[in-house]
Image (cartoon, rainbow, N blue to C red; front, side):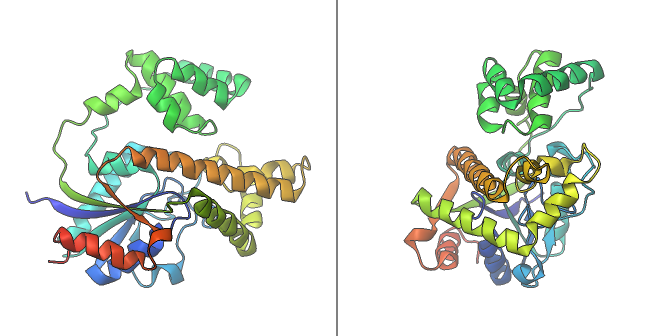
Length: 311
């Protein structure tokens, strides 16, 4: 079976991935698969920066806002659905572009990581949940660093589900989740990937763009969206999202709104830094720096032409 060419537009939050992916899709008659672990959920449109109709510019987008926020959906579930979606797009004679900032999802898809079926020990999970609630995410990551430093480096302390999962895999199998992922690269990828990364050479310019986007999100109704999540039944995945949880202390009367907004901006900047750390490890990525070119699309097209993607 012939391999499917895939253009991957990756990078940190607020770097302009959607803008570039849409521009390329219009030139290539392509459809876009979103690779964002939070854009898959409904009720998080503003916080997840999911593209609206105007931003899509008539280009078909897949895997956006199709799940209820209390639905469990693992990276394995996502990758399986993304494989099916990419095959369907290609079968219809369209080109495939993936765009997003969730590095684990992107690499698992492009490298055809095979996820095994794993049993869940409910008692172990309960104990790990209790430990997390007692000592906090930062302390759990430090503990994780003792046997799986790679996972500790890439996980966010607030991502309780994945932090606990890393412990579960190790305690249940004696092998780290990082090692299992390395061993799962058994089958050849069905794709020919070409990876474009979008960011700024000067990090402060990216951070300024993040701050401005948070201000714009607030004008669009982010506070109201976060309040709806705050008032929703607890345990929903949306509670983990950057853009919602930072307002919870404000809703509880524990801080001023300005403090919550600054917390959100800081958390988003730190998230962008972690994304860049992840993507910098992938030598396949061809970086485009927005502060070094007036036209990122033209730069991307030139890179793609060298590799025959417009042939």
